[in-house]
Amino acid sequence: MAAEIRLENVRKAFGKVVAVRDMDLVVEPGEFLVLLGPSGCGKTTTLRCIAGLERVDRGRVYIGGRDVTALPPSRRGIAMVFQSYAVFPHMTVAQNIAFGLRMRHTPKDEIKRAVKEVAELLQIDELLDRYPSQLSGGQRQRVAVARALVMRPEVLLMDEPLSNLDALLRLQMRAELKKLHREVGTTTVYVTHDQIEALSLGDRIAVMRDGEIVQLDTPHEVYDKPAIVFVGGFIGTPPMNFLRAEVRKADGRVYLAVGDFSVEVHEEWEGKLGEMVGTPVVLGIRAENIEVRPTPEEGTLPAQVIVAEPLGSQQLLTVQVGKDVLKVATSPELSVAPGQTIGLVLTKAKIRLFDEKTGEALKFD
Amino acid sequence: MSYPRLLRRTLLYMGVTAFALWVLIPIFFIGISSFTPRNEIYAWPKPIIPSHFSLDTMEFFLGSYGVLNSLLNSVWVALLTLSFTLAVGAPAGYAVARFFFRGREAFRLGILITRMFPTALLAVPLAVTFIRWGLYDTLVGVALIHTAMALPFAVIITTGIFMGVPKDLEEAAMTLGCSRFGAFARVALPLALPGLAAAAMFTFVISWNEVFAATILTVNNRTLPAHILTTIQASPLYFRFAGGFFMILPALFFMFLIRRYLFHMWGGATAER
Ligand SMILES: Nc1ncnc2c1ncn2[C@@H]1O[C@H](COP(=O)(O)OP(=O)(O)OP(=O)(O)O)[C@@H](O)[C@H]1O
Ligand SMILES: [Mg+2]
Image (tube, rainbow over all chains, first blue to last red; front, side, top):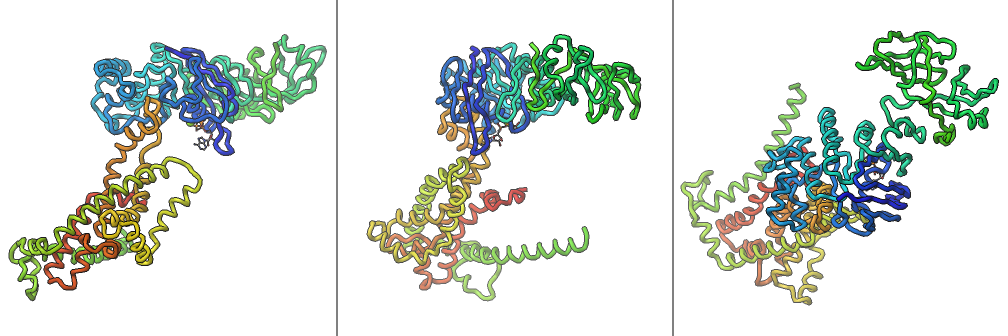
């Protein structure tokens, strides 16, 4: 039922714009893979190359071990949910859902049964006789998903299926899509530029930039250990903080100098960092991995509060450290005033270091 | 409403009214006169509303030598033109709407330029060519010329129609098992049908009203306008009224049906509301 998708060295350019740059990607059978990236990075094009709606310039596409590079969409065993839903306006909901099965010449009574079943699954069985113009956005979206699922595809492709829904409905549909995937188990590639959607839905996330996958990992890894500065800055609300630092050594201890202050590093890193003394690096740390002391004490990083935003379950501080601006998450009970100087303690184990020039994470294993 | 705006409005409506009357008054009199008893047409002062409704004039017109025949010819030519035009124009419009190809913009402009060529210039060469090809004085020949005249409009209208059908829909059909052509036939075509019908009516009217080419390219197989044109000098007034009425009939009828698409074709999407 669920098939593996494999892209080998796939390239697709539109004139001078390279939308997909020599991409290698393996999606495991039954996996829910999210393609995440900023607008124009080539997510849709990648999906369309898998679907066969775009002819690749070079490279090969395999679905379930079968080379489908030269096959039209109809013969790839895929189903797709479009961002616009692309529900046929001249057909009723039932006809829309049945369309693919009719193309396959499935017997009538079987089609009827399948349509009913999938409509119940998506809770649109009351709407089967309506035309799309009589549906809300959320209902149309369900029809599009039902129309794809009824095909029992080996691979389900979705292009930002929730982006046209309002925030509340999006939250609800997100949970439903996740549940649906657990029930159906189809290999799914899901495109979004909403990082929260990606974190909550994906078994793995492929973060894209300029037609390339820059990191392919579980949501936890992508969030916690971004492979490059770009990923840390793109994922998370607020995004990861970055500080300019320099590797120094004194009294046999390796540390990071942030302005005039020092930040301790993981003992295991000292060996490798010891060889890099004098090198400028970028220090990355997430807002929730910074502790706040009401006053700058010995061993803390002094910071000036610019803004304090109470956000319900937490309080978000915007502070200035040297020339860098950081976001710090604290308990809502902590009372600080703008202009106040506080002390920051960075959680040692959560610090990430990046090469200043390439932006790539330094590896210490 | 502010004073200048009121003034502008008033002027606009006066202008529109004058223009509409200028077009409608002759149509009104032609229509009325065609159903007036024959002797009353010459009455003076002429009553605006005739004393009674009569099919007398119409009967005389339809019974005149050659009229019924040319009426049928006109219908045939118009239907042939319509088929030729749609057969060529609709695929052309689809191609311009869907595919990028070298010279696409030049093609779109070039289509209209063909309309700038005066048919009068082509009259003699056309007649010679048609005689040589055996198309002279045939309905197919006239239909071919009418097709050439109607095609530019047909392509422009159908381009607009197919652009209005989202590409996504066809792609969705393709992911659901259709071939390219299947997706066109099952999704794009049904959605474009009302628009295509409008284009068809428009083509029909163009052919129905065309007089110049029809006159020079036929001798015995006259279309209605060609027949009226060649006999009008020798005809009584009531014959002319009845003939005029037949000429405007399809145009009036179709224009009411397709005016939404005409607005669309001229880029006035706002005019629809
Ligand atoms: N049909 C096309 N013709 C020309 N250029 C295209 C075409 N489709 C995409 N591109 C270009 O390819 C690049 C990638 O486009 P793509 O639609 O894949 O981005 P995306 O990641 O899906 O963005 P978004 O989040 O905005 O949907 C963009 O620079 C885009 O302008
Ligand atoms: Mg996209």
